[in-house]
Image (cartoon, rainbow, N blue to C red; front, side):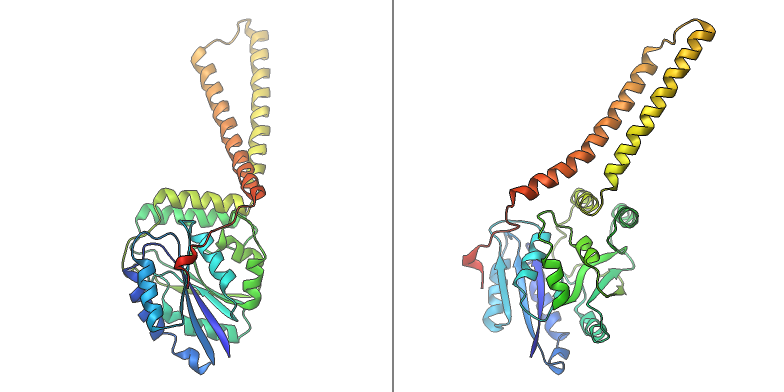
Amino acid sequence: MSELTVIVPCKNEEEAIPLFYDELIRNTAFLEKRNVALKVLFIDDGSTDGTVSVVRSLNEKDPRVHLISFSRNFGKEAAMYAGLKAADSDYAVIMDADLQDPPSLLEEMFGYLDEGYDSVATRRVTRKGEPPIRSFFARRFYRLMKKLSDAQIMDGARDYRLMTRQFIDAVLAMTEYNRFTKGIFGWVGYKTKWIDFENVDRAAGKTKWSFWGLVVYSLEGITAFSTKPLVLSSLIGVIMCFVAFVMILFIIVRWLLFGDPVDGWPSLMTVIVFIGGLQFFCTGILGQYIAKAYLEVKKRPLYLRDEKNCF
């Protein structure tokens, strides 16, 4: 008998977890016909509410429910990696506890595995309910990633993805500390089917993502899967050197023709500030890559388990 592990990263989701569990059980009855056992693995990412207690109560009535609890908040990327690492099953699927990843899609997703796909991924075709400014920047981010990165990242892509054992092992083979799972999914390749669905509001609780947090996350993704920003900074440097050379020629020619030097302190300061700003910009890009290398060479673990809460 094969097995499906449902990996559920959660932080402060005590209100949403019971709703998620009931909806998941209702929509996984088809697994019995497929001779597939179900395991539900919650990853507690340093919750400060009653998340652990709620999952423990579910475990008491359903032994298929398991929990890995972190010693503190390590982030969703670490939680997804921990779930995949603990999943020794034939299939695994990552889902959010807030029901924004509809469990009703699971049966359709399994159908595509029968057609030979190694993973079945989901993407939102609408962002109804999101703040307009967040939707705007999210779309710009995905468009930019398509141009900069070699990894396939679809607009509106979710972490909600059903994977075969081959796909899981490929993702786990990428052990970098700075993880951007959406990019990793695209980088490993394999045959992937995309399913579109309408945006679903949270069933309970509040989002853990602030606007600034999403901006930082997007910058992490760009620098994790593309070196083109470094090429861009080099190109800006070449262009500015050319501009400076042209300005020098212009000053010399003007002095030869008119005999007076070009004066004007404000214009000079404007040029200095502009070029200085570009230098800081390019240095910042370089610093991002150096920082990533610094974190990688320290080889710190992605997460630490709080064993007293794991079951």
